[in-house]
Image (cartoon, rainbow, N blue to C red; front, side):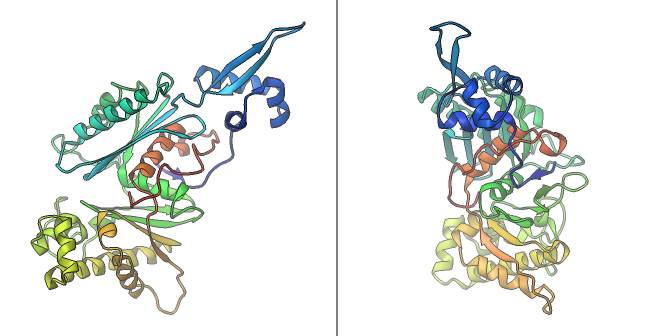
Length: 393
């Protein structure tokens, strides 16, 4: 699916919510403030009242005529839930209709639980957090899930490797009955960066996550694009010359066999990323060489991709980028070596500014907007800010 990375115009419902977020108001006051008719206001309010986002806080029946009803935003009513699952952590957020974060949880995985178990644990922890805060979850109308699974329409999934979308839906349905929108983790993180993070205001960028795997996606003309079948951006599976390592996908020489955590640890003998970082800081030549080769390979792939789409920026995320911040400069140098030297490309290479909670917010955004490219309704973003501003998602 394609998702816009800039905010469209608000609907009347959105404008009502924004107005009531400032202070309670009567229908007459809302009509005046929003410059709309009572008929149009009534239709929009009916939707908001039905979904529990707005409620009457007081009705003044004194005097003659129709009683005056004071309306207010139900700020503690959850409207959307976003759930993000990666190979190393899970995150969940719960937002009200105005986009305020009501509850947020982040769970770091020190083992390797199944994807289904990770999602179940995140749902349970988020629901418990909401209950402890007295949040009303009876009106949750949107659930979004970001999972590290192939999402292309023609992807052939092994039932032993990935849970089905139906299985994920049955898990979230234990807590919230809304049918979830499921998409890939990396795409949800990239969308969040475009809406609220490092890619804000950029018409095009490439997002690349270096973590347990190597995942990427492309934003073009303010749209996160999926291509003909939803598989655009699989940069981790571009073949790098001189590399014949077998990838989990079945191919030989994929970028992922050089630039993922497991690949780096295998090539250096490090037990985990912490041990690899210690080896690099100690000046271990084997570790330094593996990291340099990874940076060169990533730069080569990004340079080739940049020649094709000419992005405004490259956004790098993931635990490898967090562990070795200077790798951004190394990747940038190798990338620019692949570009035509006689032209000014003006491509920034930057780190992601949002962490897992921000990416989970992207999941909630997608669910609340229900595949915007397939829905003609214009809507505002759930929020103008993000749930966090931390490490790359």
